[in-house]
Image (cartoon, rainbow, N blue to C red):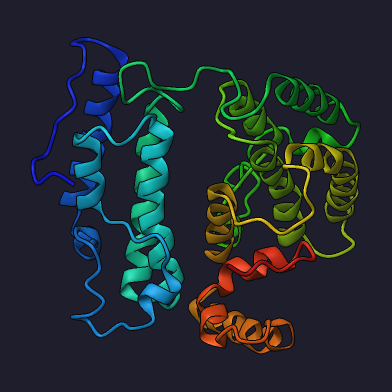
Length: 321
């Protein structure tokens, strides 16, 4: 890597220049917030003697790094920028105890950031020629068409009306919703992402649709009307999309290395756990893995991959390097 920072050159007055200025202004505002003191630079876990940090946090991020990546033209779209900033809050939530100063600061800044990003074009270009093209990212034309057709059908289902828009928890007077549901999702948002080419694969689109049902089942009581409807729609969606997921794979039934989308989904799902519960989950995985560890594979190696392994195990397969 060169020691010199190569600032990207943008056409004056273009969308990329405008959005870069918007995103940079947001970063600067976050950096000036007194609550951001923990997030200005990379976590020096060695100096702080936080030896569990690199085991738990696989994708470190901080506002200084985001600012540099933005200046150096490392982001193709505003969604790439958003993901990195959100990663800062997710990491803080994963590693720190719920209710601690750092955890609460991350929550506050997460809400501030989300509010400011409402004025930023989703999927907008941060490079010349970048941005969402509407072509479906890494999907083939056939996959994109099939996903669009199915999503239209799903949205017309007689019970899907309650999942067509984001949950308006303020209007519904359910203030605990954002504390329980860390990653809201709805079919309308999925549709917008699909149309704007934000999904890199059928798997990533399926993950968002599945999140709609899992959120509803997590928030609502078992056997309530919404829970039952979400469960039934999940079964319907799984039945329809499983063949699509199968055809999107390489054709082999062998376990594959996790994709970025899968790792991101796991990281976001882990954010819903408290630090205490997360430690407990990793401990369970460590013990549960012992019978399946191939002879000669150090258990520590498996333990370091615990988060990834939980995700793979849920699909009935284990993958070792």
